[in-house]
Image 1: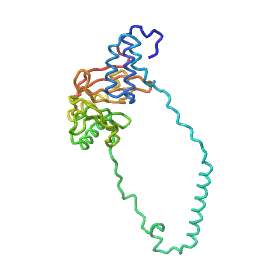
Image 2: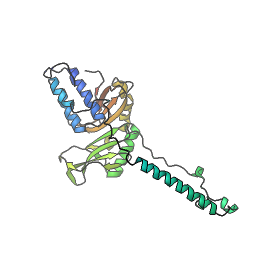
Image 3: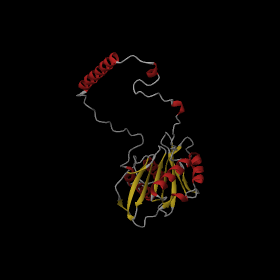
Image 4: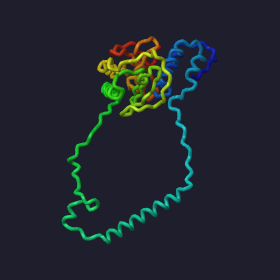
Length: 282
């Protein structure tokens, strides 16, 4: 966090809140995982100097930072590829023309079928399209959908932690079957796929039962969170379901807008409001 004061200067409450806002943003866009985010927020609240706070954000990308440019591709073979493509088109055209010249005249019977395949054309108007529901994960409907697909995939509703993103994806960490000392992470994009190799896990890691979450009550807070957090033009961009440093399960709801104004609130699994950290609050 840039400052005109020496790093040994005592930190104010406003400085700690500004650092927490940066951590909220980094957590929301995937730079930090749940454990890193929780640890850094705890350190931010107990930091005494500006230097202590700066260490917590020095490895994070600033909001709106430009993406690295992809390497330039040298068009060494571009002319050769273009020539080959033109030759293929000309050859195909001549083959079709030759085939047309040798083809017998169309008959009344053949005119009623598809001349290329010999099958009668299909009436597409009579085919009913199949639409697979995939609501936004940061909505009550999206939570219900993901929770149900999770239960179908794993046979239970237990997680170590879960993150839901407005972009349409989610991630979850859980223990391996019959191996409580190993955890594995899965990504969700319409279905769950393993995204990391198993890693060490404390056998006493608390789990959260998704079935115990009052989705309707949480959904009510999702609708009112932007106004409550003093970002009326914002939207919920990220949610996390995890065990807080205080020891109980919480649902954190993060709100932001196009001006990178960030805030969040915490809910119990029953939907009760536990804490709110509005934008601009002290």
